[in-house]
Image 1: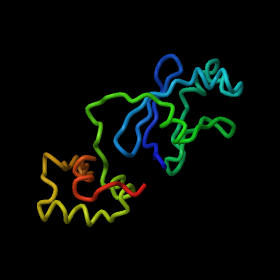
Image 2 (image 1 turned 135 degrees about the vertical axis):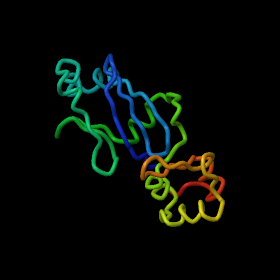
Image 3 (image 1 turned 30 degrees about the vertical axis):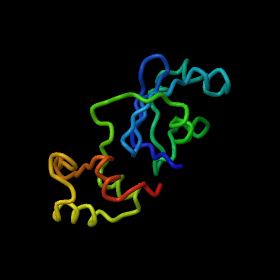
Length: 144
């Protein structure tokens, strides 16, 4: 299963905080991979390089340079879940991707009362977010 990466941040002690499209945050400890794959040990020595980590276009993983990258599945499968206040919240864009829907479908669900404002969905500026629970209730299991 594809686990789209939305955001990555560096933490102390060569640990990354990775936020996934499905509303889950995980920490990923780089130390085991540094021991297994020598090319990753440069991240321990070069803090500027370590801090430069970015999400690949499309969220398929993360990268530091042309030689150092990790896939979204590696990060998801070997990361540790961290509970946050934002767990289970999805942008409409991510929800439509995961369920194979159109954003207009979600907007109509609000208009027809399938999603309750302030409970199932909320708008922050121009961005709507929906809970994973509401999406599963209305549309079943996700497609991706």
